[in-house]
Length: 206
Image (cartoon, rainbow, N blue to C red; front, side):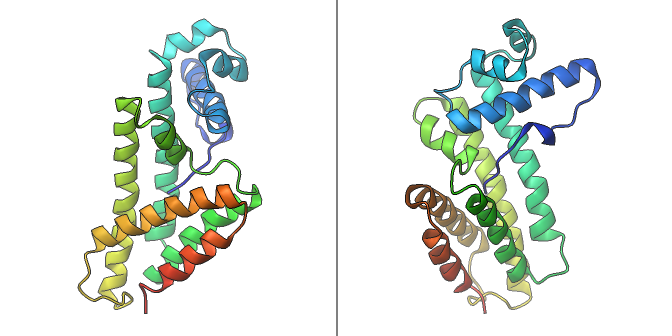
């Protein structure tokens, strides 16, 4: 779904790896705050405290950097999502509810600033940059797939209201509704969009 990243989550290995990951972490934070068009190579290298040449030693272009940043954020999010949605002794229904509750609490603690970096860049760049659009679509598909797997588990144990519903389509619907709720929370600066989303999500379960 959504995931905010800061520099400390990236693992560093060796001097070259450290420099690359340091630039990636610092630049991702700037990207999260300012978006694609507000983030230049200068802003990235200033945040990382490295000369401009260091950026091009590791990244072919700003577009290449952004795609790698998105993939790194998504990989961290996928690890977290899998742990919550698939790795718990709780029922599938409760895992799905806990998953969205947890992300909502993160947004609430930040007063609904920021939001989903993947969704933000999709809104900003999907019409302008095919590489970023395709990357976001691929990452969203992975997110939807994890939700669908948890929904199938709920279906198998009789927790879904519709015994024969298409879990892949339902997961897509839930994901779309969630991304919309995130945008509305940013606009309204309150929890009402999430409350509505949460109430409607519960209607799919017994």
